[in-house]
Image 1 (tube, helix red, strand yellow):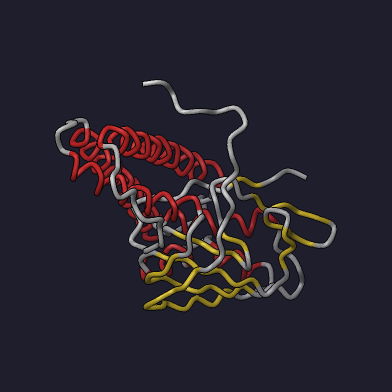
Image 2 (cartoon, helix red, strand yellow; image 1 turned 90 degrees about the vertical axis):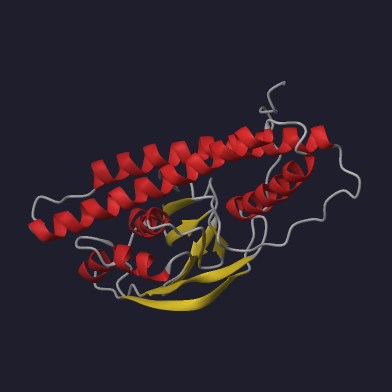
Length: 254
């Protein structure tokens, strides 16, 4: 049974995470190189997210029966997502250019720490909290498949969710839903309905995205279930992921 890949998240985190303290006497050039590498990696991830989001929305949604007003809303939503990602890429490119000046050591150290904190949230290696939503999905007939649960995560990512926890599992860049004889598993963990999903981001935007015509809420209802969405001032996500050590990849030489 094929794994369902997860879209890469948006890294410009408004959430907070605990990160290790900086070296009391850091090497300025080392910080500059580290910051540049981190920002370069985030630029690549954001570019990939733009492509995947566009292809996913272009290939999987059936809009032939949607009303004109619904199509306008969906188009506006997609344009807003692209604009957010492009703005984030522009900000990271500006920060990378600024850090290319070796004389700006204090700014380099501060930017490196900020990017390290953001990367910890992006990779799921640190807890996070912030405004967001809680989604409780019922599935009394066990009709929802891996692809249906993946749609929940993709829609939240597209709406700007910065951190997602699906059941007991923190969503990461390599997470995958898999259909099994017993139901659906996520990263090897069996999921049992009702499914509870926590997401950190703009509550109203994510709520609206899940409720678009032919979207997540509609699909769950068509399969006999319900999706209850609650907007929260603070969502606490405590599940974390262990970051594996690459076996083949290593930083490119400078």
